[in-house]
Every structure is written in structure tokens, then in C-alpha cells.
Image 1 (cartoon, one colour):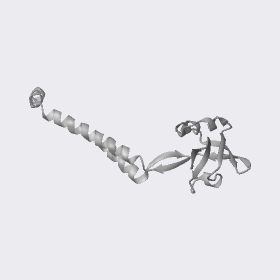
Image 2 (tube, one colour):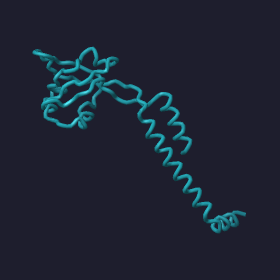
Image 3 (cartoon, rainbow, N blue to C red):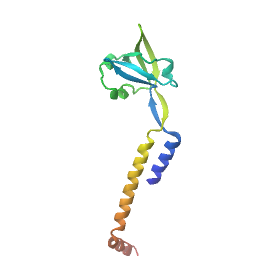
Image 4 (cartoon, rainbow, N blue to C red):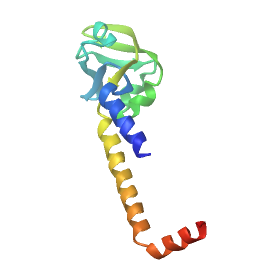
Length: 143
């Protein structure tokens, strides 16, 4: 198991983990959702601009009433989705696609799991070493 954590840590260190990314970030501003930032290297960079007001996602205007960004991953589960946005005086419909990208932030989680596993390993080893009378009876029954 220890080797598995080390291998996973090495792979994330080298390649990262694959995560779904929309390429843009929303922000709640005066009771409406706006595009706060767009990753310039994403597909969304050609279609969205910072300051675009989000009117609907996949023709569902209820998104405007959601106060928390934490439910957006549920809304954006699909690989492709459509945003209705307002840019200045005009309203546009923009079809976007979720992208897969490498993310290296999960490396800390792998190493914390590794540390916990090492802790369990050491405690198990110490417990095994602290009971020598039981160990002697087990070895005697094997011979």
C-alpha cells in the first residue's frame, strides 16, 4: 500500500491529475452572475469576456437565483453546455465545452494520505514489537 501512494504521488508530481474545467470563473455581483475571469488558453476565451452577465445555462434561467457557486459543478455536469449571456445591449447564446486539464493541486492530498499510511504502518509495527510473548507462541506453533 505504501508503494501505491508513492507511485501515485510520483505520477501526480509528473503529470498532475485530470480535472474538468470550464475555462472561466463566475462571480456573484449585485444579485446576478457575471464572468469574472476567462482563461486565455481555454476554448471559452474565444467566446466569453470578463463582465458578461450570465442569464441562463442550458436554457434554465433559475441559475440567476442560485446564491452559491458550490452547486455549479452539478449544473455543468455535461461535456457541452449553452450559456445565455448579455454583453452590453445584446443577448448572445454561446455553446461551450468542458475541458480536461492537468491539475497538480491534489499532490498535497496524496502526501497527506501517505503520511497517514506511514503512521498506521509504524503504529502496527510497534504494536507487533511490544507484545513479544504472543510473537513467541506464534513462532513456536509454526515449527
